[in-house]
Image (cartoon, rainbow, N blue to C red; front, top):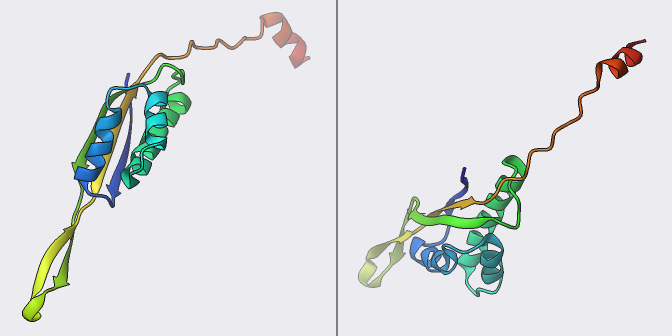
Length: 130
C-alpha cells in the first residue's frame, strides 16, 4: 500500500521544481534526501520537505520500515498563478504571472511485523479483581 504526501501552492515555477524532481525520481528515500541536501537550487528544499513528510507518514501512520522505502512516483503540476502587471515604456503595463506548483510524492516499502500484545490469562485477571 503506497503512502503519499502533497505540498500545494509552493511558490516556485513548475518548470524549476520539475528539474529537481527528475533528479530523484525512482531512487530510495535515503538516497534522494542525500542528493537534495547537496543540490544548489531553491526548489530542492521544497521537494526535500515533501519527501521527508511522506517518509514520516509511512513510518508513523502506516508502520513501514525506514530503511526499505523507495520513491515510486514524484509529480509536479502547476498550481494557481498570480497575475501581475509590470510598467513598460510609453505608459503601458505588461502582464506576467507568478507561478506556483503542487508537488506529490508516493513512496512504498516493507511493513514492520505486527507486534502482538500479551493478553492476561484468566488466572491473573481473577487475582487482580480480588
